[in-house]
Amino acid sequence: MKEVNISEVWKKKYPERVVVAASWDEKNNRPNFIPLGWFMQTSFSPPLVAISVGVTRYSHTLLHKEKEFVVFFPNKKMGKEVYYWGTHSGKDVDKLKESAVETEQAKHVKPPLIKNAPINLECKVVDTLRTGDHTIFVGKILAAYIEEEEEVILNFGEYKFGGIKEQEILFTP
Image (cartoon, rainbow, N blue to C red; front, top):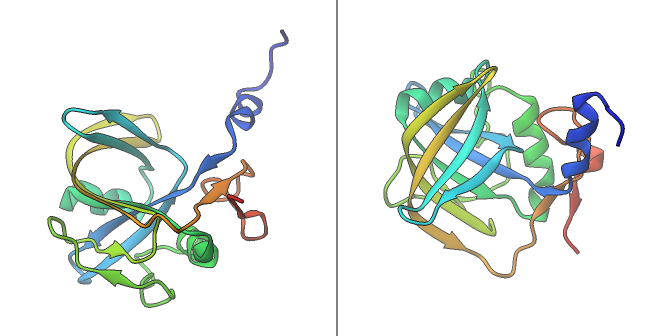
């Protein structure tokens, strides 16, 4: 075994699914989207998931304030949107207006569900943990939705903005 720089270790964990967290921007009355590489299930009962968001991100501010989110797995047709959402700040642009995705109202939270996403999870923040330059937001799943025919985007580990760059977005077969 050889000792390596920690950045070399992270390259070995790919591929992984890309997820997007939709938060709510009350000030501008609109959703905001952030692609994330750090997502996990943390409990069956109660059903909990965790997302990790950089403390400098606009979504971080929104999640702390509104304490709810929708996490969804984008389908393979959403690659351009995922790239756009990851390279533009919701402070400056209306990410929904600038994308081709369709939404529908969630039952329990303000951020919308994304039509044709393979998975949508409505979540209420129940805990947070500051971990260096990120905060882990633990969300209790209030409702879950699937689209069985949709294929997900995979991140193969090229770190440019949270894990992907436009020409390297790859998909499940």
